[in-house]
Image 1 (spheres, rainbow, N blue to C red):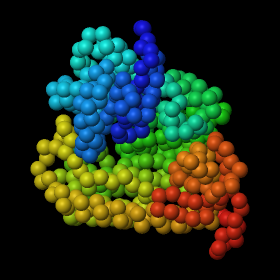
Image 2 (image 1 turned 30 degrees about the horizontal axis):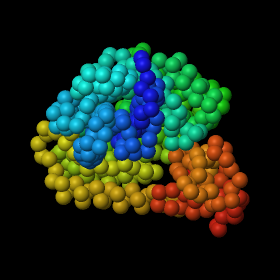
Image 3 (image 1 turned 45 degrees about the horizontal axis):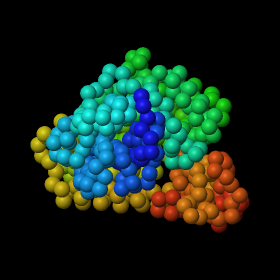
Image 4 (image 1 turned 120 degrees about the horizontal axis):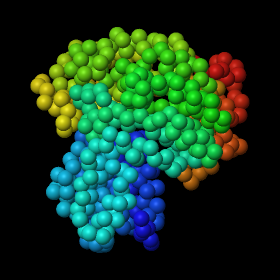
Length: 457
């Protein structure tokens, strides 16, 4: 392949960590053509909009971004504009018909073909739509260069797609069925990252704890964690997102016994009502979910649990919603991500009767937010006077203030004057709890009530 020289590219990314990681791969592919990254679409000859359609709001943002293409291409006719990601997979050639300035639509299984796509458009002027699913997605096996949120933390995709077909979710339609990477391939990528100075990896998958079911017919995610834990120099392992149906005792034991696996799990509940969970096709009852939380907290004391909650699913009654409120108050998550139900194309829930009025969704969502904010605030206030271990990720822009994360995934901003470097793992003492983060210091401080600082819960 002949390289394209003296040209620039810009990638706009919407959505989840998986999309961020896919954008890293696309950036590497474009740089293989000789393109250079720029900080805005106004400067770029190749523009890629990597999209998310899991929420209606995210999809609307994509169309807003596409609206800029007309003026950009009028200014520079050489601009090649590509839409990738879930909206591309969902809308296919309809996007080309809707947006006349768009040159290509690139599906979630076809990321590896981006360089050829750009070259072909440059050569022929064709408008292209490449969205067919692949039984073995080539881009899944591409080790992405380390372009994560900081030099010492990186994402590693271990699987993609989902085979659950929850009634509200577009992922099986836009990402296809579950495909797991071979374990040896994952281990090679992680070792290479550690050799470059990475201390923490986050394992990514739409249903990460179902890893291996498509390879060997059973869940082998705990075994993968055990193998990764043996890599010298890898200090921390995180993973997201987990499905409650695939959470079992062997994973809880791995989290409790493996030194590098962090004490945090994102385990979406979605609803506290069994009627709603059944309509959602989640595959578990609220009682079983509560038992899994109890098992996790028994096996991994002090673990942080976060979750997703959907309010206003079709048919959700006031009684159903109160069950969700009861679950929030019983489980006491460290944090949640909560959303109003939105009718996504191709999903079973889009066609369900008894759609909940938007004003009811708004009221329910506000109540969920208020309850969770109070719980999170209590956790953060209780952290004052405790000792935590954090990995220094970097420094606040334009300042010398360092920040990092605890093993339970809480952000800690340190006061100035701490003698730390990026990548250090240091004990800190929490001095104050804020709404979304903690303040701390590396200097030993006295607790107002208990003398020297104590270890956290």
